Image (cartoon, rainbow, N blue to C red):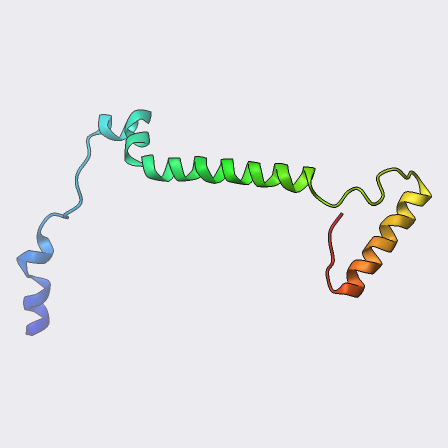
Length: 94
């Protein structure tokens, strides 16, 4: 039948096109770094950008409205800030 001829085709029995690696070639860190250089550099760049973003988000964020208060006054100030944010449709996590 046609199905038997397809299944017994020499194309399907040929070795895979994937490159066969030796044990030494896969086991070293330098090989791993060389093969994934682009991915690692993108990860480093992403980490750097996230660090810069978080630095400026924390230092320039909204924190000056209740900074001089303490205790119950600070809690009351935070509650007013949350109420105003909810009323405007913007809820900020403090």
